Length: 426
Image (cartoon, rainbow, N blue to C red; front, side):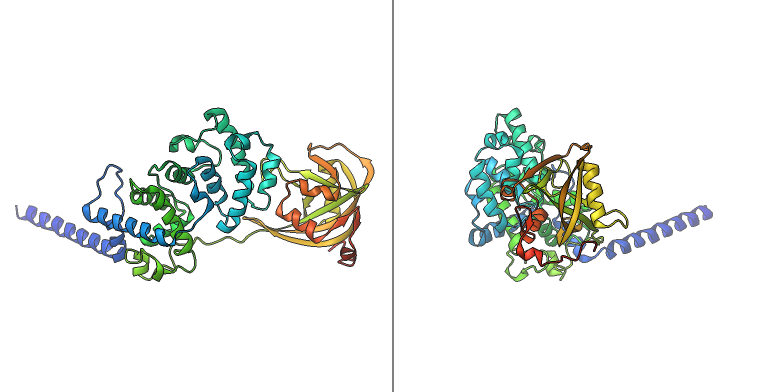
């Protein structure tokens, strides 16, 4: 019996040691993390919020509504509950500043006032109206989405998340915005502005792009979304992120939620949300040709799938190895377009940046030869007069080329004749 008692005391002692270690680990998690968990939602959707948590969320909602009533922006798409118009605005606002979107939004709706109008329009016309707004996959998806809605819903926008996310280009957050703003249905959103607000409000120090963190943010967003008054709430939290809780210089003193914000209380507003380390942006070199023939220039239409899909532009080819730019241009044109050209004077360079790489375009004036081989890649090519270029949807890089190197009637302008005329092989 004495040995058993000693063994039991030994086990109890070990259990006590383990408990102390567990408490020590929990303590190390930090005071703000404990505070954060106290007002985060439970995993179960059916869980009823404790009174203290519910009251805090109600106070946050009330503060947001009050601030929005005084400081909220007056924007064209906020004057309508038309689901189509709200859909267009939400797609345009993805990765684009509000001031830029306003001009395009009004022009787009004047050209395509209904889903049916957009569905019937040729893609090229849609891209032309979108020209300069960037991220052209958005325009292609709007066009595809309009065709889908016309075929499947008789032009009507569905009012459930399940149906909305079937539309090309609509994800969960865009669906939530449409439901909240057009149909007054309480639906969470999680765009970049809302992510930033929630990360700071609840002092989430992890990368918001992490799958588990994003799941938690969706749960928070759902928990914060009111059953009533969802329209002003949704607008207010988006405006707060855009106007006050900005990425680099949040104006915490002017924030209506500063008394509830754990990041502000702990001096973490400048380090939250956590930014993942950025990889170096690749820089590509390309040879681009302004190819002349009888007073016209050659343009090609890019495949609809891929970068700049459906847009027209001048033929260009990435430099391979140590080949000269004229050689790259002549070989690429013959290989892909079946056209024999002679690369002449180098006009200069154009720098352009996309979301995931930068490119330098080395621009050459070229002439087509009489020889011609098979167009192996079935590229859509057109010879057009320079004055006709404005009729075609062109990328930002091609527009830079047109602006910098004006070509009239197959001859360089006087300005360009004096520029870089000795740079053929650089």
